[in-house]
Image 1 (cartoon, rainbow, N blue to C red):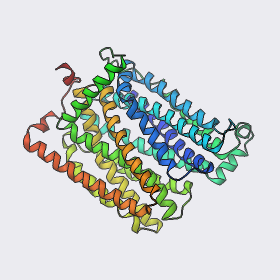
Image 2 (cartoon, rainbow, N blue to C red; image 1 turned 180 degrees about the vertical axis):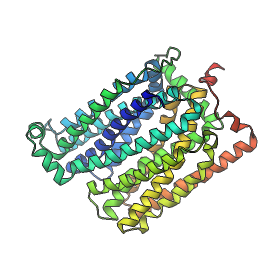
Image 3 (tube, rainbow, N blue to C red; image 1 turned 90 degrees about the vertical axis):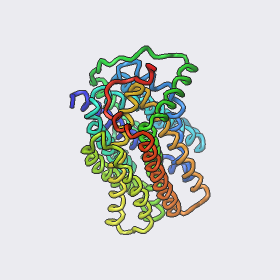
Image 4 (tube, rainbow, N blue to C red; image 1 turned 120 degrees about the vertical axis):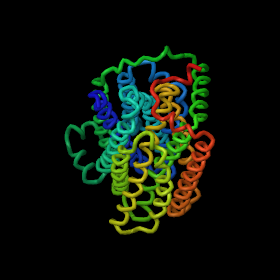
Length: 435
């Protein structure tokens, strides 16, 4: 692996730590402002909306400049969102107006993340040959999940009574903040700044793409064509369908675990955030094991997704801490093992057919669109006051059923064209754009 690849991983890790810590701080801020339960997943909904709304533009932006520079600029946008959330309690606004500002702030972070992602994943396909993509993705996904653990736990620790009191007791912090959430967000802002500094150290890959369009209508039209190209590719459509399901399910499960911890186990928010970290540890283990799966064998992991859906349905029957942790580790391990090869396969086909930036933008558009759908469905079930364990069963059945459908779809594709496997591992990029 090249030195630049490790710098990308470090920058991604710090940025992801800050994103996830800020989510926990934002949930705590909503609770402090006495917002309703459904507001936390809806805040994530607005975060995901930024990915969908900007999908046609962020790929062109990522391919127009060196991706290290793009990562720096977009990380600066995240810092802006963090600052807005930090100051939202300083404007003398009513609670409902402050809640609106929290939404706006996290949406701004989402805009930065939407533009950051094509650069982050795109630079990996520029730095690594196809045969190293699964291994590279294993490292990236493993470190990303580790950063989710660290960020989630960091957010929980920063808002916990003991730590928040200790922070507020420090003179230099006390002179800047008044509440536990302000103290937490101040610390998170420092992590964003470290990520930005690392972005500046990432070397250029010297990969250049044709000059990108700037006309919004042209960009939207072209993007629609990119979406059709990936969905019509018989390998790309399966990997795109699986990763779309996974990220929608993962984002929803994040909130389900917090609500489950509160209702089923009686945990506080800072304690429930540890549960998310336990599941993420399992994902790291699964991601490491997945690094041994060759790109050519990526589709063989599809049945693991079905097992993961059934494993989720074990959550309502466990109460003891060891059993709770075991189930979450299993769910995380299964998810990490099947998503890493699928992610690498999709990035590979996207890079071959389109370009690094545009293919990741298409992937993000579909994945975040599914996050919008699944979070809206989850918020609706909360609004209907469905028991959390009923929601978990519905969620697990949905994931398992859709994965079975994708397996059948893949088999039909291979029956129709037995030569499909030969398209995995090709070199080059932009093949579909030259036709």
